[in-house]
Each structure stands twice: as C-alpha cells, then as structure tokens.
Image 1 (tube, protein in one colour):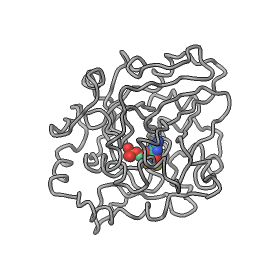
Image 2 (spheres, protein in one colour):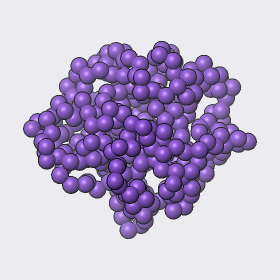
Image 3 (cartoon, rainbow, N blue to C red):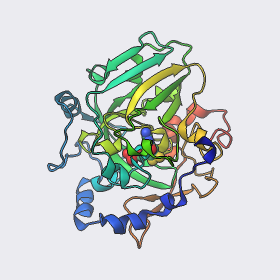
Image 4 (cartoon, rainbow, N blue to C red):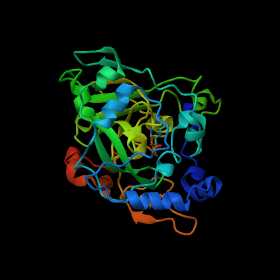
Amino acid sequence: MRNQIPTVPESQVTDEAVYLSRRQMLTAAAVSTAACLSSGAAQLVEPSPEVNDPAPGWMHSLNNGATHSALSTNETLTPYEYVTGYNNFYEFGTSKDDPASNSGQFQPFPWEIEIAGLAEKTGRFELEDVLKDLAVEERIYRLRCVEAWSMVIPWLGVSLGAVLKRFKPLSSARYVAFETVYRPEQMPGQRSFFAAIDYPYLEGLRMDEAMHPLTLLATGVYGRSLPNQNGAPTRLVVPWKYGFKSIKSIRKITFLKTQPPTTWQQANAREYGFYANVNPAVDHPRWRQSEERRLPGSVFNANRIPTLAFNGYGEQVAGLYAGMDLTKDY
Ligand code: MTE
C-alpha cells in the first residue's frame, strides 16, 4: 500500500458543493441554530436534546462537569450537522459522509489505553481511570484541515499534558506517539483492499507540543460525548496544526526518544510533514494554503477567509519553533 503514493484525492478537496447538494444539510434550521450558538460567551454550548448519547455514566459525569475555557475563540460555531456529518475518518471510508454513515457498529466502550515506552507507569489502563478527576473544559477551537476547509468546534476535553503527567514520562522522552484502534471488523475502511493509507493510523508530537496548554484530549463535542465519527471515545485536538494531527479513537500512547513515523508522512512525505503546523506561506504541492473555506459555505458562496499562521494560535505556540525553518519542517 505504501508505494501507492496515496494522497487526499482532489475530489475530497473540492467536493463540498457536491456534498451539500447530496445531503441537503444546509437547511434553514441548521443556519438558525448556528446563529443562536454564535460567539462563545462564557456560557457552555447547550447540547441538542434530540441527540442520542450512549456513553456510560462516568463519561456523562465527566463531561457534565465542564467549565468554559478562556482559551476559546468567540467566532461563530460551525453547525452541529457539519461537525458530525462532514468528517475525515478513513477507517470508515474516504467520503465526507462515510464516517457518520458507516460507524454505527463501532463500540467505543469499554475502552482501554495502553501506555508504553519511556515512562515510569506503563501498561493497560481503563479510560475511566486515565481521565478520573481531571478538569474537563469546553474549548471552542478553530479546526483547519490540510484540504483547505475549516470549522469552529466546541470540544469538551482535558489537557493532554495533565493526562501524560499521570504516567510520569522519563526525561529521555522527547516525543509521544499515538495509535488509533485497529478493528477491521468494525471499521470498514480498514478492511478495504484499496485502502488509501496503512492502518493503524499513527500520529506523533514532540513532547513540548504534547504538554502545551492548548493541546486537548477531547472527550466530547457540542455538550455530549464524542460521536463515533468524531473519534469516540477520545481523540487529540491540536488546534494550531492541520487536522490530520488530531488522531481519533486513541488506543495506545508511547513515549519515545526519537521522532515516530506518522501515517500521512509515511504515505506521502512530500505532501505531509511531521510538524504540519498551519502555514499560509507553505502551499500544499497541489493547492494553495493561504486561504480556507470556513464551513458552512454554499454553492454560491464558498465563504473563503485568509488562513492565519499557526491557525491564529501563533502568540501561544510560535515560540515552540524558534530557530526552525518551517518551510523544511512543514
Ligand atoms: N484520525 C484517524 N484515526 N483517521 C483519520 O482518517 N483524519 C484526520 C483527523 N484524525 C483521521 C483522524 C483528519 S484529515 C482531520 S481533518 C480530522 O481528523 C477531522 O476531524 P473531524 O472529522 O472530527 O472534523
């Protein structure tokens, strides 16, 4: 598979209009919901009453204790229907509506996370214990996909740094690797003979990136537990990096001395780097990165806006890359 040089198909980059007309999701209702929810005041986003949330009680209790985070943007939220209906999760298929359509069989509970590598505490842990007593916050972040679309998403989650510290990483640990669960029986994309990428999906961060206060381990979205298509039961959210760094349905975390391999870099290193910081000055070889389509757009108005360095989080994170040439370490 690896020498197939897979890429994000051009159709994935330009298919929003098709997607819109197919799903007809840009309803008046969705637009008015977004308007009501716009500008994240200090109030938490109200979960929609008709959304079914089958997570266990401990996950509800955790998320119900969420407080609003000052790290939130007050930009208009992307409607729930888009956040949970227009997804990238190749394990369930490569079309934007595949993850919502094909993830119904996926079982995110019970869930264990394996901790491995350079840490004092390693082994297999129940997710409930990994998250116990940590402060859940609602963080409204911009998400910028490498495909040049973006959303504003109200996540619930805990600081990844707080989670990692529980396992007492050794000072020799300079990187953290993440792995998505491998369950071909529940994830049709992993069974596909023509899979675009190798599985399990792999990602990684430098230790200082992982410990940064903006880096979130998400436990919910829009006031509820994560739906399967968004990475249940827990996924990464790294808001200053292209969305592919925000790995979903994490089953293993490994502390390492050296930079780990990552799925998209292995698939096509010329197009996707390890750092993947949002950078309007470095184009993707096949499209420009200086602008993005803020969803929802419409067939008549793509809602293009300029892309900001580090997705607008430069003040907080640019220092992590001092002295590096980000045209080489893209
Ligand atoms: N994680 C896994 N395991 N598999 C994937 O295909 N896609 C990534 C990322 N995490 C992906 C993944 C990409 S390309 C993006 S843009 C974001 O998830 C999308 O997150 P969302 O669907 O919740 O908006």
